[in-house]
Image 1 (cartoon, rainbow, N blue to C red):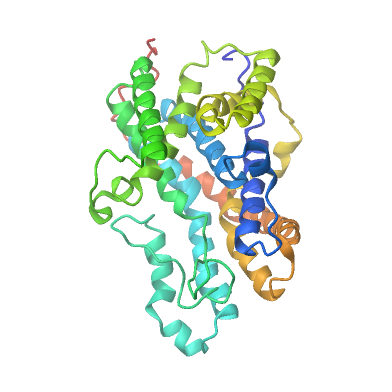
Image 2 (cartoon, rainbow, N blue to C red):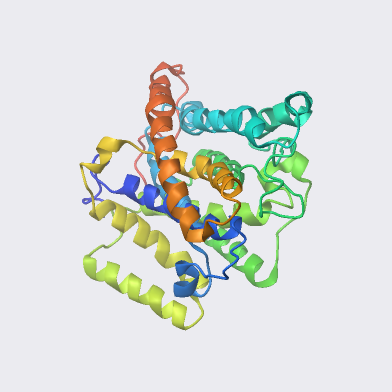
Length: 377
C-alpha cells in the first residue's frame, strides 16, 4: 500500500464528502420523527447500524490515518495540536455564533429583548467552543428548536453533530500521548493498544462494561458519560493510525477489496456486521481512498467539515419552515443542497484562509522524539 499512497493523489476528500452526506441522510429520519416509518438504506443492508454512525466511523478512520502522518511531519507536539485546532475551531466558532445570533433570533418564540438577555444565548458559544472541557456544554440557546419534532417533549438540540468534536480532539491528544510513549515508533505497541481498545469496545457493546467510572467534569472524554463513546471512536481512530503506520506492510489488490466487501455482506447474513466491521471497514476506507482518485475534485476544496457541522441547524430550520411536511427524503435533498452552499462558502472564506495561519506558528526548538525516526516493527 505504501507504494500506492500519494498525499496529493487520493480520494480522501471525496470519502469525507460522502460520509458527511451520509450523516445528513441519517439525521433526516431522526429529525423529521420519520412519520412514514421508512427505514434508511444502510440499516436495511447491514441490519445493525445506521448510515450516520457508519459515516462517523469513517471520519475517525481517515482522521487517524491523516493525523498520524501529520504528527510525523510536525516540529513538535504543540505544533501538531495547534495545526489541528486551526483546522476545526474557526468554522465551528462561526457555526456557534450563527446559531446563537442569527438563527436563534429568527426562530425563537421570545421577544428579542428576552432572547438576548438570556445567559444561554451567549453561553452556547462560550461553553461549546471549549469542546465540553470542564463540563461546560449547552444543547441550545434559550428555546431554539423546542418546537421541532426532535428531540421532542419541549427539549432543544441546536446542533446534534457537534458532540463528536470533543471526541475528535480527545483522539488528537491521545495520539500525542501514544507518540510520547514511543508507540508510533515501535508500532507493535500500537497494535497491542488498539487491540485493547477493540476488546473494551466489544465488551461495552456486549455487556455494557466500562473499565472505570469517574466524574465527567474532571475527566472530560474519560468521564463516565463519554467514556464508552470515546473508546469506540478512539478504536476506529487508532485503526486508521495503524493503516498509516503499516502502509508498507499491508497487502492490497482489487481482489482483497472485493473479498472484504463480500465478507461484510456475509456478516450481514450472519448478524455479525458490527463485529466484522471493526476489522474490515478500516481496510476498505483507506484502500478505497488510496486507490481511487479524481484530480478535478480537489478544485472545489474540502467542504465536508462544513457539511458536517452546519447541516443539523439547517435541517431543523427547514423542518420548522415547512411544518415538518417535507418528509425524510425531501429534507435530505433540500438540506444537502443548502448545506453544500453554506459549507462551500465556509471553506472558501473561513477554513481555507485560516489554514494559512499554520505558517505563522512559532518555530519552537524542542522537537518530538519520534520525528522522522525509523519506525520499528
